[in-house]
Image 1 (tube, one colour):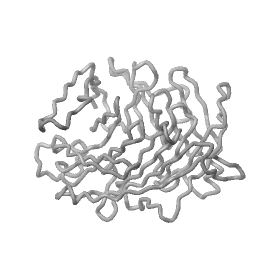
Image 2: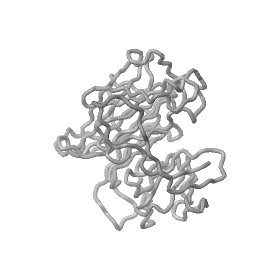
Image 3: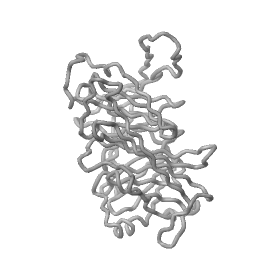
Image 4: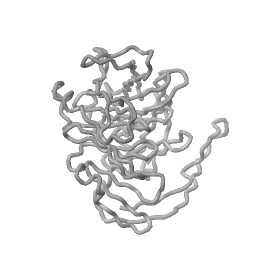
Length: 350
């Protein structure tokens, strides 16, 4: 496995009025290293203010890669006792915190620079009362300051946590968990929608204030379906009562059903894990959706605006496939397997 740290990923501004030309990308290799591991890491992230090392995440494993030397450190003292029971790992968008949720329902938050560990309890009782297990597909999302968390289980059970008040001295954060309600018209993936993907972001809007936006993308009747949940954290919003406590949020569901047949004649969707990848821009305005197809040359990216129900299709020109007629659908290296929001809302597909 080889890691290369690159500079100048792509041009930041494109003039769409100019004649269509081949896009030039200037890359500068700052450093590279090779580590001996056959299985790729599911996440490679920076943590902390000092970009001195990369953190490699895979399930319930975390390793630290020192890029100049290529050496890895597998044991992080504060986390070693927690990782064995972790079912999901993630980080805040600013890279200052690493978060995980254990099979017991306890959430831990590790601040890398200060080496401080905090925990969040209270979810286990709610899961037990709802008859829900954390053994399925779990995704955890956090606001930058870790005062709100969103947990998605099997694409159908959504839980929200809000911190009561900031207490820097207390290592167990107090707050409230609630299950976000869905209505009968909410379309969510079925168990056989193995291609389903989800992403969420927390942001501040001039109109709505503090918000959280979650989208779930999956295939439905040969169409691409996007189900979006918008949460407003506003004292004036309609309160949701749970366990005799009021939590002031409002939840709005919306749906987009888009047929790629209208724009892509050779559209052949696949139903397997990783077939669809999605990523929100940090301001929550645009959701980028990578749609892998049976022929990698036909892979495309959708730019979806849940607010105005608009979809823009981007052709990624074969995704670097040498043989456009190839249908090696399980060759991950020839597919779009990740999307990342870079500076100024530019997206990097890999």
